[in-house]
Length: 196
Image (tube, rainbow, N blue to C red):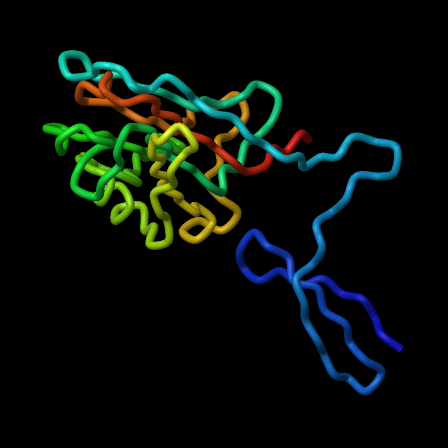
């Protein structure tokens, strides 16, 4: 015979446990609470992107933002920064020489600012600051190259970075140089949204 119990581990996550009739305890991660049958899922996949970031921010920095929604919390678990150009090299930003000021990627949560990338001046610096060691440059059929920087936020913050509903929380990607020479520049945000 087992008796189901739920333990709190001191954080926000639940640990489930089963106690056998002999007094032995086994623990495991609790499955997420699921919405009742016939109702909308409370946790849904979230994906959005900002395109056209190959702009000139050399005189006036351009701040691209993912902002809070009025109806649900957003948890970002992964960010992909995509640079497409004729060449993408470690010591350049696409085929543009290493930038003067660089780009910034930062989060604003409950009034606290945290840099994920600060003054990233070339593809190699973006990867290093993001902790990305596995990305490689891909070649399209058109001959252009695509460099992807992958940031797994859930490696640093369990559950991902939260952008609370109706809050001033946000994630900003700031262009501080002239990136108009790139073929394209896009950032993708992946994670989940909590409806209720």
